[in-house]
Length: 119
Image 1 (cartoon, rainbow, N blue to C red):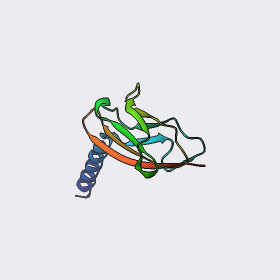
Image 2 (image 1 turned 135 degrees about the horizontal axis):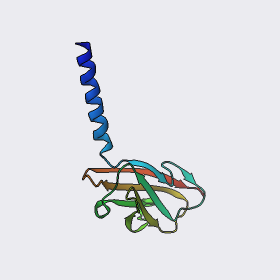
Image 3 (image 1 turned 60 degrees about the horizontal axis):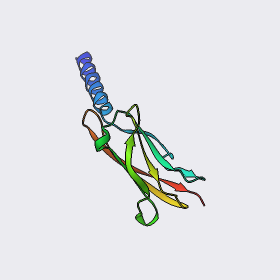
Image 4 (image 1 turned 30 degrees about the vertical axis):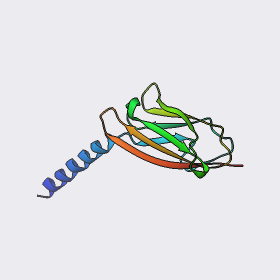
C-alpha cells in the first residue's frame, strides 16, 4: 500500500511539473527585477522559459506619474524566448515594467516588476 501511495504522489508531482513548464514565465530581465541602475537603459529585455507568440506578447514601461516611456511595440527575438522594447530617455526615478506573454502552446501569463534609475 505504501508503494502505491508513493507512486501516486510521484505521478502527481511529475504532472504538476510538466504543467508549470508549459507556461512562458519570466526567467530574467535587463534591467534586472528590482534593480537600481546608474545609467538609464535604452531598452527593456525580458527572457522567458518558453517560446512566445509575437503578435500577442507585450511590454509596457511606465515612469514617474504613470507616464508611458516605452516606445513602439515589443519585439520577440530570434529564438522566440526573448522580448524587448525601446525606451525614451529616462530621467532618475522609479519605473514599472508590465508584461504579457502568450506562449506558442497558447498559455497566457503576465506580470510586472520595477527598477530604479539613480540620480
